[in-house]
Amino acid sequence: MRIYSLFLAFSLSLFICSCAPQPTLTAELVPRSLRAVNLEETISRRDELMMAYSLTSYDAKNKPVAVVNGGWGVETVKKDEQLNLQTARASSDASGSTEHSPAKPISLQLPRNGRIVASVVLIEVDDYIQARQTISKIQKIHNIVALPIGLLLTATEVLTPLKYVSAGLVASGIGLQLVDKLDEDDLLGQSSVDLREADLRQKKQRLVHVPAVFTGQNMKDAFDYRLEYDILLKTVKIQPIRQ
Image (cartoon, rainbow, N blue to C red; front, side):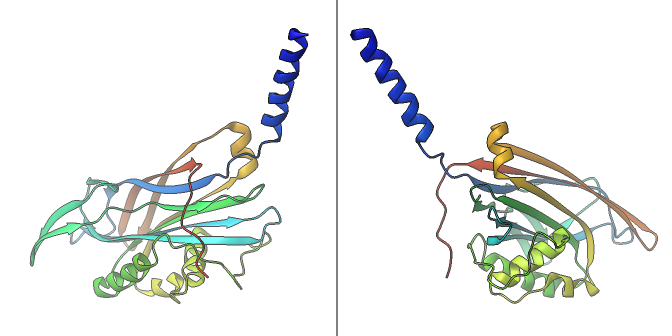
């Protein structure tokens, strides 16, 4: 009788565990480091950079659910310089010492049986004032979850990381199209990762490390940038979706 009771209790515990819902995953995009192997501006020997990034989630039917945005810059970098994007940075200019903020992470809930797309774009700036205004707008809506109502992000579309970031900013209500800002600025590179909730659970994966190499030619100048960012999978709550 005692053995039967123990067996029954064990079976019941297994049944409860199997029926218990799995905690919802939250994806966090964390920019880690940026290295300037070679610059686009060889005459001035420095590039002025800005970075924009986003997370966009889709449900099991490939319908867009939510989006968050982040931005970093405008920063001046020299050849062979490596930046830790998660620490503040002090530098000096004509106005004196300036404190530069780190690239803050962004987080978004991963829908059950859905997916999430992480996108990052790196831009070399020509118009410093305009770029600062752009980054300021992005940082004001940093990590605020928005509903992409009317956003044409369907499973049949082939979207570049730049289009993901730009569409995410429009969905967040600041009316900014990065694509329209690149007439004078130069896109140094773009990177995107598509993560499916089912695959992550099956692999029990909690970290996706992404090394991105951005190389190219602009007139006679060749550039080479190495960006690294992580996507962390957590079971934590984030702020509610903005209506």
